[in-house]
Image (cartoon, rainbow, N blue to C red; front, side, top):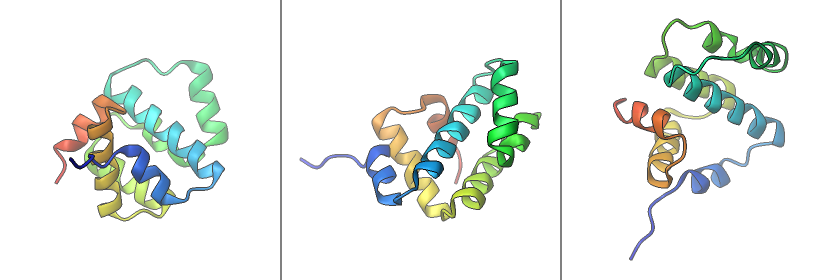
Length: 108
């Protein structure tokens, strides 16, 4: 019986620095909040603008698109599109970031 590839497997393969790990978590939670139409509270908005200005375009985007997510991940974490696809596959298999993983399932 083989195990499914998980987000944790993908994460370990990336050898991210602690700063990159932190930024990735900020980005994934931000995108998830935008997809679920969660209100971004003022303190969270300010924190992102101060500590992760590279993601301000996500905060300000009127709509989250597949391409916006992919290009942000590729540009900020030096990932390939294939690696990003594997990340979302792992999320679906493990159950992480359910709304985001489901949204990205539609991306080909």
